[in-house]
Image 1 (cartoon, helix red, strand yellow):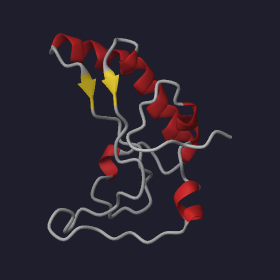
Image 2: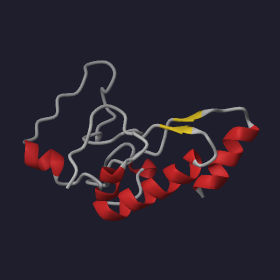
Image 3: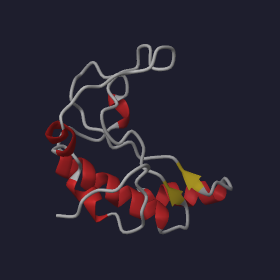
Image 4: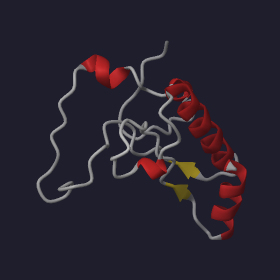
Length: 114
C-alpha cells in the first residue's frame, strides 16, 4: 500500500505526505479514530512503519502525525486542550515499531531506543 501511495503522490506532483496518523484507539468517542490503525501498539507501529517505508521508497517525504494524546476534537481550536497524564501513561503505548525510525520521520521529538 505504501508504494502505491508513493506512486500516486509522484503522479500528482506531491513530494510530501503528512501521514500516517499513529495515535492508538483508546475510546470509541475519539474524534479521529478513523485515521488510526489499531489499539495495539505493536500492530499500529508495524503497519505505520510498513506504509511509511513504502511511500519513502518512492522518494516522497513522510511525516507521522497525531503521535500521542490526540483524543479530543471539541474546542480544540477555540480554547485549547489540557491533557493531564503521567510519564508512564504517555510512554507505554508508543508503537514499538516506530522506535526503529531510521529516516527520522517522527514529527516533534525523539523516542528512546530499547
